[in-house]
Amino acid sequence: MTTLAILTAAGSGTRLGRDLPKALVELDGFPLVLHAARRLAASGVVDSLVVTAPDGLTDVMTDLLANDPHVQVPVQVTDGGPTRQASVGAGLALARSGDDVVLVHDAARPLVPADLVRRVVGAVRSGHGAVVPGLPVTDTVKQVRPDGDAELVTGTPDRARLRAVQTPQGFARDLLVRAHRTGAARARAEHLAATDDAGLVEVLGEPVHIVPGDAAAFKITTERDLWLASLVLQESNA
Ligand code: C5P
Image (cartoon, rainbow, N blue to C red; front, side, top):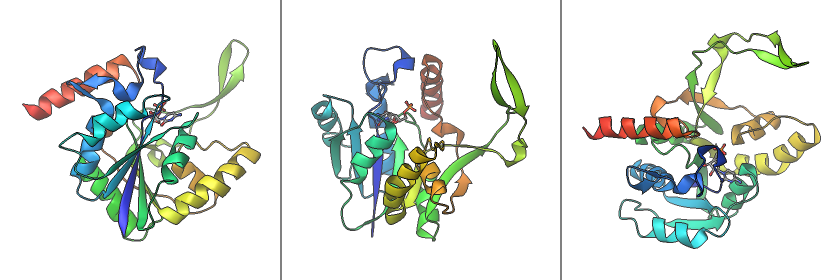
């Protein structure tokens, strides 16, 4: 009974405006993917890693991760796919027979605390098939549809019942495999939005549970997020 973490790092990250993929952008002198891999390994509950690499960068990623003294778990690097979902599928194909729990984590969340990783794995091991970290939503959220040159508000969901979800998302491996096969096919056929792995589990009609997330696991999308992450690191090193 082992836990595999799939670390998705194959995106282009064009919104950061750099000429290299987001996972290789440096924070405090180290690429984002290395920060994330170190933190997953430091949790003590991840037995091995599969990292999805951008086109042509599998060797670069392998050198980076296999030689890092802080990533003390076996690492396999594989080519990612054209979408995040395809990249997760490629990683899932490399799971070993004993991997009964699979985490999916985005390299774009480099500062994920080890505690959060343990919380997610603990909840899966306690019997929940799909577990997602989530934070309360502080903004009021509007549902909209296009209306001429603007958008028309069609509803205001009760924000007390909304959660902003993060990664790592954790799954019983068999459930995640089924979600990526049957759930993904159904989502495509029925035009259902399934923008994360938990969404594919929901399409199957299987329960997804939330555990408390952590603000430190925020996602790097823009240059401002990168700046914020460097401040968070400085503060935690002080
Ligand atoms: O683009 P976004 O930030 O939503 O991507 C989330 C994560 O999925 C990133 O870590 C990115 O590297 C990864 N990804 C991937 N394969 C893709 C697209 C995104 O592994 N084709």
